[in-house]
Every structure is written in C-alpha cells, then in structure tokens.
Amino acid sequence: MKRQEKSIGCKISALMIGLFLCGAILTVFGQPKIEVFKDKKTAVEDYRAIFVKPDKYGDSTLFVGTKKGSVMLSRIQISATPFNPVFRPLSFVQPTNGLIKDIYFSSENGYLVKTDGIYMIEGNSASWKPLVSIKDLPKREGATAELWGISFTDNLRACIVGTYFKDNSDDIDKELLLCTNNINDKKQWEEPKKPKEVKTEQLQLTNIYFDKNTKRGWAVGTNGVEGIIWYSENRGESWEEIKAISSEPLLGVFAIWEKGVAVGLSGMVFGKGFGNTTISTTVIPTKPNPNTKAEEGDTVEIKNTSVSLMPKISEIIQDKVIPKVTGIVKEVKKSGMLIIKEIEVDSNSDNVKEWIKKRFENKDINPKDVVVIKKKGKDNDSNTITVKNDTSDDWKKIGVPLKNPAPILRSVKFDNEGNGFIIGDNGTILFMKSGETMWKSLPNAQLVGIDLYSIVIDGNYALIAGTKGTIVRIEINPVKK
Image (cartoon, rainbow, N blue to C red; front, side, top):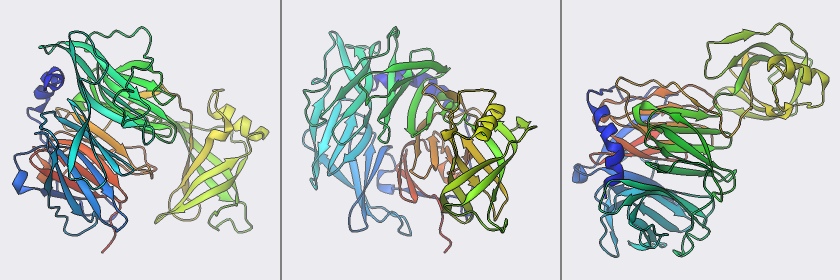
C-alpha cells in the first residue's frame, strides 16, 4: 500500500537530513498570525488530509484524515480563541487499510480518497461507506491500481489520478487517470483521451486540480526522470502534456483563473500567470481637483514610468516614449489602502494601440487584457498595471525563500481573494498576499520537525494538517483586538 510513496520516497528521505527551519509566532499586525495546536491524544498520529465543512449556525465540522486510515472530526468555531478542537473518530462500514489522500464535500455528501478506493459519508451519518474500490476501476492485466488525488469540476463530475503497479511488485506499470460524470456510480469511470506520444514507463500522476471557474484541469507527477504537468481545457475529457519543466517529481498543484502553482521535491515551485508583464505607473484622476481619490466611473489618465517582467523584478526597462492613455475605473476596493482593482481602456484607441506596441515589442496582446491596477498609499502614489499575457503552457520556475537543503513542498492553495499558501516538510509555510508577486516564509519554532501535508482555506483562516497530531491555524488578515 506504500508502493507509490516508496517509489518517490527514496528522494524524499535524502532531503530530510539536516533541514532546519525555525522562528517565532507571527503576531505583527497586518501579517498572518500563526497558531499551532497539537492533539496530545493523537500525538503519534500523522494528519494527512483536512477539510472544513461550515454550517448555517456559524460553526463548522473539521475533518482530519490520519495516516493510519481513520478520520477524526471536531465541531468548532474556526475563529474561536483559543483554537482548541476536540476530535472524535468516524467509523468505517468495513475495515480499510488504505492511506488517506484527500477529503472533499460536495453539497451534503462527503468523499474520502484513499489509496485503495473512494469512500462516501451521507448527510449527518457517523460512518464512511465504500463507494468505489480499486477493484471496480478499469482493470489492467497483471497490475493493481493505487489512488493519489481527486478533483471535481462540479458536484458530480470528477477525475482521479494515481498509478497502476505491477502485481506483487513496486514496479510501475502505467499512470492512472480516470474520469466520471457521476461520482456516485462506480460503473461510469473511464479513461479520457490522454496526451499523444507520452512515454508511460515510470509515469506517475500524484495530484490533480480543476478550476471550477473555467473548468480547466491540471495534473502533476513524474515520468521517472522529470516532473510533468498535464492540462485539460474541457473538464478532463481530453488532456495534453505541458513540457517537463522540473528536475524533480511534482506533488501538488492549484490553479484559479489565470494563475497556477505546482510544487514538489527539492523545493521546486513553478508558476503559471506569474510571468505577466507589470508596468509601474501613475494614475491621475481627470477631475478638476487632481488630488481627489479615483472612484468608480472616473476617467483616469495613465502615465507610465517603467516596465518589468515578473518575477525578475530587478530588470527594469525605462520608457522613452509615453503616449497618453486614459481609462475608466470599473471597480475600487478599499482594504486599509485604496486599490483600483480594475480599469477599462478603449481598445480601439490609436494611442492605446501605440502604447501596447511600444511597451510589449509588437507582441500579440489584447488591449482588453490591460485591466488590473493596484494603487499604493493615498491619493496619487505609485500604481501597477498588470497585462494578462498568459497561455496554458506558460509555466516558469519561481524563486521562493527556503533554507538549504530545500524541503519537500507538498501542497498549494489560494483563496478567492488571491492569498496563497505553499506548505511542506519541517514546518515550511510560504505565503503570498493578494496583489503581490513574491512569496514570503512564515517560520514557527513549534513546527520544527513537523511535516505539513494538507491545507484548506475557510474565509479569513487557513487550516493545515501535519505530522504528530498537528493542526496549524493561520489568520490571514488579523483583526486588531
């Protein structure tokens, strides 16, 4: 049952030696606040998966999957102080030894992914029942399936990833990728159209994620030599392979709208949508009083000062010719500072076309993609415009602040506001605030020696599951008490 972990684990164990990461609890106002809870009753247990299910009464049920294959739950208020969940176990209809990989709730029903199959819990039931066994999945002669990840495009359609191992062996037979239009019908699982000319030897898929906004899907893994990414733009009905971009296996992926992040061994982090061109600007409202803050519906003049290609922020190219560009503010967001979230420019204007031509060296960029402005400070301080010039295969390596040797990064998650987290071994937590482009390390002395596996974001809080009965709660935007 540990075959797939063993196949990747030889590289993982070597990276564990000598890694040290420590720090104080972050309580500085404006920075995420970290709290660490360790369940003394299950201190010898590893928490591998986590899910928060809110209810209409303001409370939540916190589900935690353990390495030994059981599921614990606690009725809590996520924002309660102190954070002190009390866990009790949920039973299974029949004994199971599969390693828990993921927990997901769709409407009222919950789905649990183990290496040996998928389990379901209905409504307020107190036990999980088998839904799909690996024996129910399309069979390969002389091979046994092992599941590693699941993702949904809607309440019923889902795809799973994993590996077929040769019977009674740790040798890989083939990657596993199956989809269904009805998660509750074990007979509907089938293999979608996979990338052409893909070498299947030593190929494993370790994680999958669908962006429900766009129905696009991403699957990551390894071909035995390099980390790979597969991409689907049609709910997983067909897949194409993005070129191998990592020298190490990839273990986690998350994508929302135009942004995506994939993480893996040796601190590997790759981003999609982080290579956008960003222009530092001054935005001046064309009201009679130029010191008036821009509001929705205002016409603003955009004066460019410099342009840089992210994430290479240091490479600044000074503008020489600045055509006059104006736009209409569509949305203003106030969050301690004035942020013009979106601006609309006249796509047919000659000066806009000239502006784009001069800034982007005749690249094929739609003027309608020149939409995002961030305004720092008060009135007319510096701003940034992001030009969304993004494609499905635009994955680039991202530098992140990690100690040497680099830890294994296991999971990544963003909330709807754009706040992002990457987690991994030895208490590694990386955070990127909405609107920013650089990851920051959030060290905590209590997490030294703790490996972090799974993360879920619920409103203003992120909850992370780790080894030795550890749950981490992070308040993303701490409220000043």
